[in-house]
Image (cartoon, rainbow, N blue to C red; front, side, top):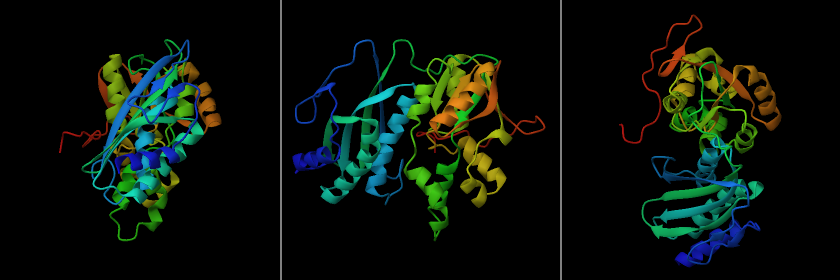
Length: 317
């Protein structure tokens, strides 16, 4: 039965790449890294009830399990190539596996990302994906290069996913479909990450919350950051359904956005804005890198906003 499930996944996710010498079907995959390229690798695990609500559609789980990993590659400025999938299932539900593989393939196929192996086992529903991508030597985007005077920017909009999670508790969630879609099917900013190579001084994807993730850049770079709350990009759907203060809270600490937060020299911010608009999704200038430590969020009058939380932490209740 296990091998039947593997065959079902393979049929849905078959992508041919010349650099995959041996894919699914042997004890290990054999791949060839192109000459003159470096390999970026990332892995994430999604657990039912922690990373996606119980009852989430299988196709959405498949999409999101890949998307959160591709977002990590995007933050490194890497081009996706291969993936591994480890799937833990309560039972051998063929229809569920078909739908999960379909959602995975919907995202993987346009990017020419090949599934080259993995594992299936029995247990609580858990999906682990490892992705591999290429960067030019020395061009990977890191968290450690932000400099005082750089501007802080983010792609897309923030806060929709956290708002969508809250909206799932509504008796009628149909008015909030756009927000819930951002929770279930985030868009990894692969093209944006590639476009930032050689320009961004530091980059991270926003998975745990903007303040928390920008804080990682600050710590790695030995700097501080100031965010202008009024500049936070928020979608029309979010602004329609929630009060302004709530939208700011979602944007600052909600997490699950999988947008890119990055720093660039101030004199290149306009160039970056134009490039990101051309690539789709756009980018917004939200603050600056300063001397000091940590992240401060400022009102229009320059006063600091006190934060009750900064983002998600798996090991803090």
